[in-house]
Every structure is written in C-alpha cells, then in structure tokens.
Image (tube, rainbow, N blue to C red; front, side, top):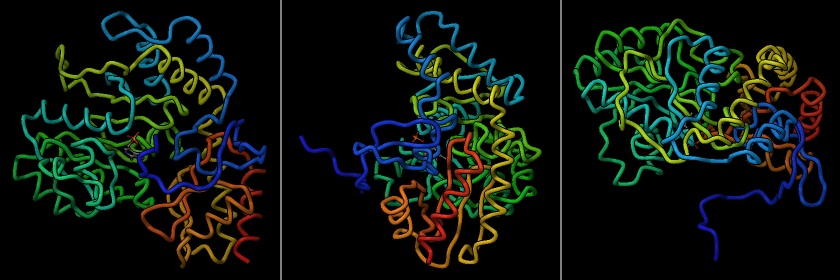
Length: 375
Ligand SMILES: Cc1ncc(COP(=O)(O)O)c(C=O)c1O
C-alpha cells in the first residue's frame, strides 16, 4: 500500500541516534541541528530516557484515564518545580495541535465566547480550531473555515484592543517566538499590553509554548522573558524528546468539571515516564544554563560570517537569514556535510533547533561546514 504522499522527503534514512548525532542505514553520522523539528530536547537515546521508558514498559505501558496514575501528578509537580509556574493545573494529551485545540476549547467554555485572535505567520497545529488560528490558507479546509478567527499583524496593539473590545473573543493565542513562520517575536510592550487587554476583556491569553517552551528559549517558558501571566500554556514537542506527549497548564481561575476534556492515550504511563526523564535530565544537566551559554557562543560565531544578514530567535531556537533562498544550502549541508538544519516559511531562513545539550565542538563543526558550503 503506498503512503499518502504529503511530505517532500530528503533521501536519508536515520536508523539510530546518540546525543547530538543520528546515523543512517549506511552508518553515516549526521550532526542534528534540527532536533527532529525542535522535538529532541535532551539528545537522542539519552540513558535516563531509555532506562525510564524501558522500565515503565516492562512494568505497565498503558491503562486508561479511569484509574489512578500517580505518574501524572509527579509530572505535574516536576513541571511546576522547573518552570516556577505555581498554581497551574495540568491536562495531558498527545500532541501540540491537541494541546492548542483543548486550550481554545477551554477558553471558549470559560468565557462563553467563540472568536479567536491569532497572529500573522503563526502556526498552531492541524486540528480544527488550531488550524483555523494558523496563518496558512493552504492547510485550512472548508470544514475548519467555519471557526471564527481574526488574524492580526504581530505588534498591532490597536488592532488587538479593537477586536477584544467587541466582546466576543474567547482567546488570544500567540507564539512568543514564532517557529515555522520564521522566528519573529513581538515586542515586550506588545505582549504585556495584550496580557492586560485580555484580563480587562474576559479573554483567555493562550501561550503556545509548543516549540519555544521547555527550556529552548533560555528560560523554561518563552513567555517568562516578559511580565505576563497566560491563562493557558500549551506544551508538546520537547516535552517527550520524541515520545508523543502534549499538555496544557491551566490557570486555576478556569474551573474543571468532570467530562469537560478527555482523551484515551493522553497522560499514559509510558508518556509520563518519558516526560519525567526529560525534566529530570534538564535539571540534572543544567540544560537551561547550557542553552544560554551555547546560544551566546553560536550567535558570536554567526556574527563573523558576512553572508549571514540577520540572526533571529533566542536560546537554541535560532534562525540565520541570508539574502538568498536556503533550500540548496540545506541540501548541501545534508548530503555533503551530513548535517540537519531546518527551513521556515521565510525561504531565506536557516533554522537551528538542536538538542539542548549541544556543545561548542558541534557548533564549530557546523560553522566550518557552513563556510565550506558558502564558498
Ligand atoms: C508553535 C507550534 N504550535 C503547534 C504545533 C503543532 O504541534 P503538533 O505537530 O505536535 O500537532 C507546532 C508544530 O510544529 C508548533 O510549532
């Protein structure tokens, strides 16, 4: 049976990984500066991760959400401890889109309203409300277009004010560092004013931390670079280092009710074991400090390369902008230099999303390769 052909594929077949590297079926080593799309947070096949998942699957891989699962509470407590987000409550699901779908649904339950405000070049996933809040007409099917969404330019505070004051907006959803859109960020004044406007207009402020969260920005959450208090924070990607897990942190002003949200697989034993191993490793290996140190080093080297016109992003969520489209450059990096990097909607941007335990030696290897390719 053929596969439904929705992905243009590179002709590489990774079969194993270790730390910052993956290995293909011919034994070639690749440096992973893409992290499987910002997913690999603690590195491939990390021993803590392998041990936790192996032990858990040997004990109990799955049971339903109808029984006690203390691993969920352990995960919630660990997220609270590492993020410093006190008092939030955790709902677990399986992916980023599902996290945002639940976030928007909760915002609508809480406020009794249904319109969402989102931003240009934002991406929030492929499910119904999440995709409608995504600024890409090509992936919105007619069935999704029934959602009431208004997309505004980032930093358009007058626009946000005007829309919220109409009284029908349940949520403002934002990526504090845009991912696939090309690493744009709003200003601190903008984010802080949006936070205030949400609170003044009974609108939920949803922080989509699916890509920029979980230590990648140099703080546990990217919104923590600003003075804001989101009502709902959505998580996925780096949370499971490849194991499918997502979740939302919910401010206690939103009251839970039996049956309000639900999932079969969300919060299962294996996913929680993976999630706990990720957080324990972020803590034990001081990966937030490493992210900041490696980010600073990466940026300092990038600044010495004249072909790089702009450096975007924060932490280990970085973009290098050139004055030409980077499709061929990425191919050369993969096929000639054996290095994975990411692309963006902005075709001139090379995205760098490595595991958070990357070291200087890997960054040096990347820039040596980049210089060879740019010659
Ligand atoms: C910011 C952001 N939100 C949501 C999603 C959707 O996550 P998933 O692909 O796990 O559904 C993504 C995925 O790239 C993302 O980058």
